[in-house]
Length: 217
Image (tube, rainbow, N blue to C red; front, side, top):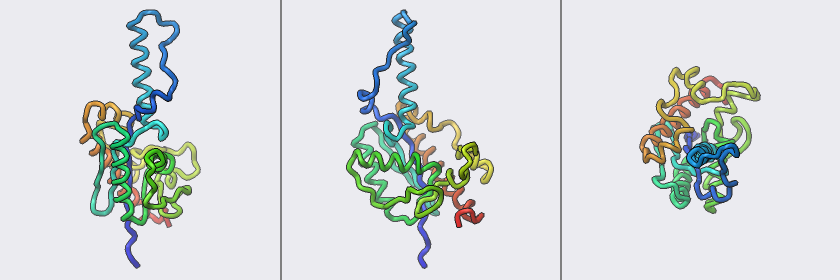
């Protein structure tokens, strides 16, 4: 029997600024009268909205995808926040994923693959692989977040916690999902890619530990 080809996947996202015209107009607090304070309040709200958009599958843009198998990590990234670049990235990603039999994510059902599939609709890209959308580790997709947390809504939910507990490592320092937007705006694409690849590598390593413990049987 052929060995199952397993790949861990992680994505990083930023705000899709083409969506902004569809959103409600931002207004300053009604109590503000000073024009400078009004503009400052609006600018602060814009920054917070961009950060929130980056974490919403309906409002974001995939700026980096990383994968990792037993040979190590790989990645694709965009350099401009344009839907056209995201389309090319997604087409390239499916060319990679079609080579694998089993897919591993951390919170991938509600986020990573949801982004990939929803954005595929936007770009009219049909998935090259039917990724299982059921809960836990059924089919060809293991979402480690759901496996390790089970049905406990209050269980620790961050990858960093599980990495420290089971691998003795931890997440990449200096950047996290909330900072990806600002890193992208500053042109720090290599930093985003390094962070993304590290997440994919550690997700793959965590999968191997969980599988060895028999939790996925």
